[in-house]
Image 1 (cartoon, helix red, strand yellow):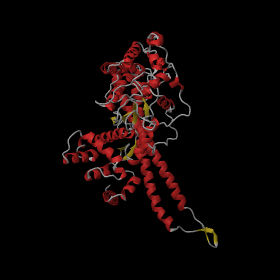
Image 2: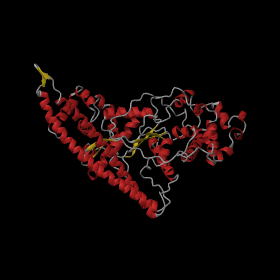
Image 3: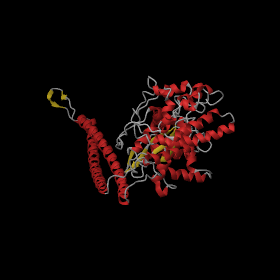
Image 4: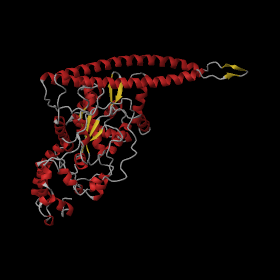
Length: 545
């Protein structure tokens, strides 16, 4: 596409074919300029509750629908995508005509840049409609950057038409239309670095900020409370099983009305039952503490809500939240592409080279997240109050041709304990797994750095890596070098291919441990891994691990 002869359908649609008549005959500009109703606005959504007890990702049983989505074969898709967006839609249409019809490479380059600039302005208008009910044309425009299906080959159109539309797996992986809707309806806060302008008084604005912090504290307390309750339930189940085993007797021979004495195995269970009782009491005490914290946070939230009501109601964000988040997403797209990458925003067969298994749609990403966690089980873990919580970050799927994923923020600024971080992932990279690994590596680095705080160059993962970096007298960006080494750790070292420095391998083995099955596999591969495996055993025996 866009090379040699133009597709007749596109030529007719864009008005570049003489037989198609004037552009006005193809599109009604009044329909483009005048707003059309997009359906009822969505009601405010409640913030999702984080389940700290979840142990893994769901199994992917369906990646495609059996029947294709009719939107991608709709001859009016392009018109529907542009309709109701005002003058910017007409501008996009005109520039796209010039771009497609340009023969001189220099002219084509100029028009290509104009398309890129105008398209982002056009997309900002569409994003503002995301909190409402989007028609399919605009939904897939935001989700995949598909301005017209015929910009893709028939095989590619069929592939996109069969993708699963809804988040049936209930995982925090978002397409852009879903992300803007969640931000616009208040289900998810704006990304860090972006300030949402409020329209109320200074006092009300101050109360709103305090309310967000109190809600973050409440969310954290709620998550810890649920996790501790799950822990107690698990201990109680184990306690009942042990007690049942202790009280399980059989009649004595010749004395059918007398049961047997405790066996040696049962006698050993008494010590285990006593230890379980201690753990149950400790867990119950922790539960009481977390419960007090939660009730206090809940009281603070209600008090601040009452204060805000006295000041005239909640802060009116309107479309400000979506607008500022759109600016963030635009920056994300630039970062995924990089300076030398392809920043053309529209999805086209000219640039799209990914296959069904390499495209960053939701089910593929979830499957790869599970693969990463299978190798690095602590990839999404954060410690709080001596407990490791599994907290999967929000994954924002950016429809760009970039090759680099990254962490936008390691956790919410108002809830460092149990909030999700945020990573951005390009949907059309050369290698989806590597792009996702770079994002997870960035997340791991930032979480470790925040945990070590002022001592990040001395302690933990970042401290050990920094000291090794200095010792080796390496040059370049520290974090970028770490990301590259993490990718090597996950793709080569996990398979027994020794690529890292011996000292660095020891640091990663300790601070980015492989799962036990991977360790067991590597133990028999070479002496280097066998030695590290033995160190684990020694640390466990000395309680120093």
